[in-house]
Structures are given as structure tokens and as C-alpha cells.
Image (cartoon, rainbow over all chains, first blue to last red; front, side, top):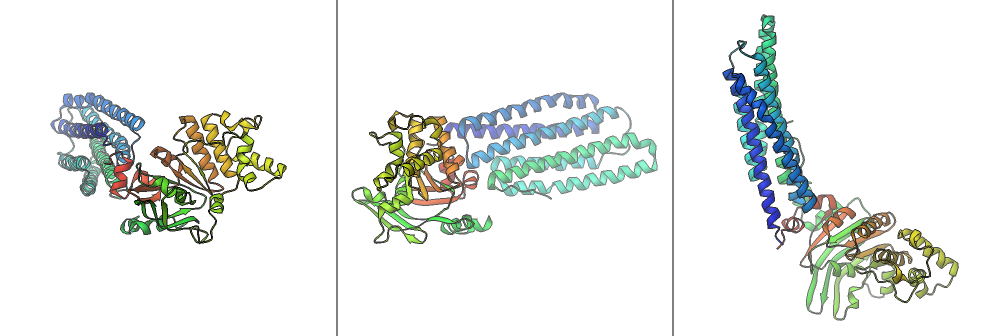
Length: 218
Length: 271
């Protein structure tokens, strides 16, 4: 017995998870780009498209349930399906952060930014690379790559702290900037949380491959 | 965990089971059917008052191993056993050991319920004792009731104890056989695919019973059904080609087996 059909189904499931991850990553990129370009219409589009990612999440969850019910998976297969459950939640939340960023962009409207965007796009670049590695680790079942990807979270946190300090200084100097500075702070916070979700994805990849449940990057 | 990964299979069992009292210690158990070498040196510790499952594909030797644990293998013409099986430090294959006594300490139930066809429910349960010469009717009645209660059958049959054992349903017959095995107060109960001929509800009752019985006695269960092994057992052994491939806590074996062969078998990719 080789379970060819089940094997095929699992492969397709994994491909769909990667696709969902890519969608969530694109949402973050586009949200940051909309902020940078002060493009409210683009931000609204990111918000509108979040429903599609939510739908992907539900579909993958149902798929996992079906495999659990009909295939009684064991060992690596069981770990894979259990991990996909968890990973899709993290990817869905990641996309929610893209939506959060876009809402901040909308609130800022056409008002001038309190400072040029440097660290926030930099955070986005790190997140993009982190997600790329995490999804590649998931696809190829590479625990070491997953650990490496999770390591990028520190850089994202550092950038976020940098943003925080700069904005605090601005707000202290000129309280008029507070509402606008807070929006950027919210954006940085969303990005930082998105990276945390990718770290969770990396933890699940390590679990899938090794059976070891442990926190990365603590 | 790391330690367990680096040590050879034999020693790993010792680590996994170190906190448990040993009911049976199998040492390099070999078994033959004439020239067929069916078991190739199985060493494993079966912990007391736990459920230990033995899984593996057809012909892997799991039933043969079970039958070596109460000297039933040797009943097959041309069959031989090598190695030792220790209970309380005593080899059950040592010269002078009475196999009948061994089978009393280590009872067995089989795939197909096999109540004695000419006997009533009551007589079936009491059979082991009456064959051993017990004539005290009151004592026999007490033991029959206790055994049927322990086998979770009493409530269903107490009003019809004198009806034939074969009048019961398949699931009830299997519990009757379990009651019959329990009546002689075994320390260990071997179950060879005890639910494979039963419907799902009866199967779950047998599994529940195995779990309950493990509060008092040691259970070793051979099963083809991996979900059953996962549900019912504390420890699982995986046999392949007459050899022990992996043995450890059931939760670990079914979520993160250490051996590739185990992984392939339990995920259905074997062969």
C-alpha cells in the first residue's frame, strides 16, 4: 500500500499553504507600498482583498478536517496536517496586519507624514525575506532554514524600536505631530506582529520535520 | 529525547520503560515453525499494569511473539522457541516449569470469540476453575460474577447465566472469553486481535475494557488496527520480519517515530 492519492492530496495541500503565504506576504508589501505612495485607493484594495485570504484559510482548514476524518494520518502526516492548521491561522493573522496598516494609511489620508519613511520599508524588506525563507522551509521541509528565517525576527524588532524612539522624540518636540506619529507607530507595530506570526510558522516547520515543539527566537 | 535518539534500539526501551515495574522480560526470543525462522531475537520489557500493543504487517511475527509469552507457540507441531521469557526473574521456558501453570498466569483471548459451545455462560466462565478441580459451588458463583463484572458483561447476562455461551452476540461472546480468562486470576492477559471480528461499538467496548483491566493486570494486545493501538495502549512495539524495529510510549510512536520503517508502516507507505 502506498497511499498515492493521500500523498498527492497532501502535496496539493502544501502547495495551497504556500500560495496563501505568498498572498499574505503580498498584502503586507502592498499595504506598505500604499502607505509610502500615500495611495488611499490602493490601501482600500488591500482591505477589500483580505476576505479572499480569510476564505483561503477556511478552505484549508476544511481540507485538513477532511483529511483527518478520512485518512487517520499518523506520524509525519499527522504533524503536517496539525501544522497546516496552525500555520494558516498565522498567515491569516498576517494578512489582518496588512489590513491594519492599510487602515492607518486611510486615516492619514493626504496629511503629510511626520518623517520620511525609512525604517518601515526596511521592516517590510526583512519581513519579505523572512516569509520567503519560511515558506521555502515549509515547502522543502528544511528545519534549519526555518530556524534561520525565525532569526530575522530580531532585526524586525530592532527596526521597530528604532521607529518607536524616533517617533517619541518627534512627539515630545512637537505634540502637534502626535496623531500622525501614532499612526506610523501602529504601522510599525503591525509589521512587528506580522514577523511574529512568521516566527510561529517557522516553529511549526521545525515541528513538522523533527517532531520537536519548541519556541524559536525567545 | 536526544539521549534516546543516539542509543541503539535495545537500550532505548530501557529508557522509555525505566519508571515501570516489569511484568514480562523477553530476552532474545526466537521462534521457528519447522525451518521458518519467525522471530529473530526479540528483547523487550513489558511493563506491569499497562497496555502494550504489538503492531506490524501480516507475517511480521506479532502473534507468534504473543504466543511465546504463554508457551502456546510450542503447541504447534514442529514449532520451537529460543531465548528466554522472564516473569519475576524466572524463565518460563526453564526445565521443570509447567506450561499449564504458565498459561494460568498468562491468559489469552483470540481473534474469534471461542466460547465452549456445549457450555452455558456460567460454565464457560467457571471452566478454568472446574477443570482445575474446583468444586465449591458458592466460590465458583462468586468468581463467575466477579469475572463477568470485570469483563463488563454481568449486567447483560446475569439473568441468563444458564443459557449457552454461543447464544450471545459476537461482542458479548468476546467479553465472555475475557471473563473466562480472568476467572483464573491471571497476571497478564494476551489479546490477539480481540476486536477484529467485531462491529465498531463492540470494538470500542473491548478497548475500554482493556484499559480498565490494566488497572489490575498487564495487557498485551496484538492488533492490525493502528488507531486501536493508538487509542488503547501505553506502549507500542513495531515488529517487522520477525524483528523489533521500534518500541516506546504510544504517544511518541504515533506522532514522531524514530525509525524510518515505523514511519513508513504507520503512515501507510510500507512496501
